[in-house]
Length: 135
Image (cartoon, rainbow, N blue to C red; front, side, top):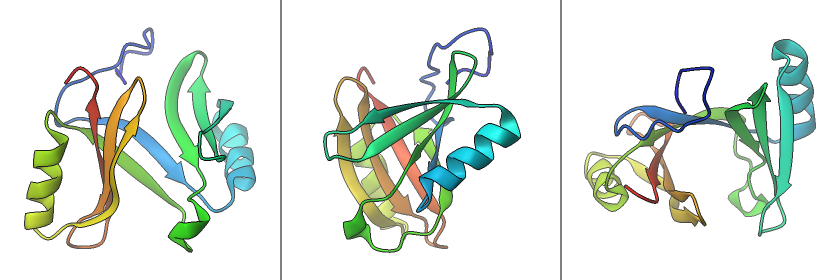
């Protein structure tokens, strides 16, 4: 997303952090905390797998997302994940893996938007890469 608060235009520059997402085991608690602390509003939407995705906003501007990890992932710790825009998701994931990263979430498509993959860097920090549809 652009840093210009007057627009909701997406910044598709490769190499920038283009989205932030809170992965939490307690969406209700996280929602209450961030809306009270920052005045964010929220828009929740059902996902095809039955989960719920929440987008937090400042005014009409989306600022980040929130999701509860699927049960099959086990006890994923609550954490913020940054999505870095890339031009070639497959090449980026392969290079990251060759440099010691571990794939946590394989390349997944978000219909009409783009694709992403989640990894842990060699030190264990979570990171995700995002490729817009028209990249």
